[in-house]
Image (cartoon, rainbow, N blue to C red; front, side):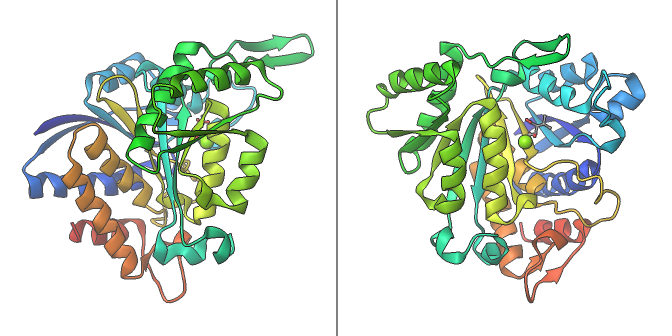
Length: 352
Ligand code: IPM
Ligand code: MG
């Protein structure tokens, strides 16, 4: 197959981790006889420096023309001034909306060789867990009306029935191939938008009689995640709640540097990015963990290109490297060999 991929390195460690993901893609081309045309696209702080905006129109167009977008990370202290009119994060939100990627899929799993890195006690992990957050990505408070009014400021949470219905369907479809349980997260005891969320999820669920839906308040969900994460399989959330809970879920796996994500919309085009940020303190030091970026590339192969076998080959290579005690500094465990970014990437490539 021939596929066009827009590649956004972004800021901080972005270029380093994407470099390793690209090495993996080259190996997949060679092994499976595919051709990937890569087009490097500027977005984030680096685009602010060059063009004054985080997502220039030509960058968005290049992404819209591609079959998939692979993204490193954006942002950094240089652009963090709270009074700034332009911010790297606006580029990310503009890209998600501009691609119509309303469904953000964030798997969080404990890798057995890394279980010791989880901050939770072993009995709490319950023999490992593998959950996935399905986060609404192009609505809610991130995109609602906001502003300043005298000495006050406001942001608005607004959801429509169609927006809730389409993300609920993504969660239910995903649950069908898994444990058939969806926890729908809201704050329906306080928020009107959450009451609409709960109602709409229940109505949509009637089309999925094989799926069990459990409504859970977000504060309780935050607590349950550290108390008994193994009870969850698919978590369905709004944009803001999913942002918060996916960070929490990733941290309890003990390895935020390992977790990938996919954002998809109506068609097969998707946006693939690690769940972690640009880690400016690690940038340029060859110590960042490239695995989240590599696994994001694997999700792209699977979900946008239908290359299940190829994706599996990448996932297996990552597992093999971990089983052989190869580590980056962030996931160092006793007896492990700590490698740099480039070396870890190379070890994974050689196992494909
Ligand atoms: C994420 C990030 C972004 C978000 C920021 C950088 C805008 O935290 O992808 O989780 O809040 O969506
Ligand atoms: Mg976040």
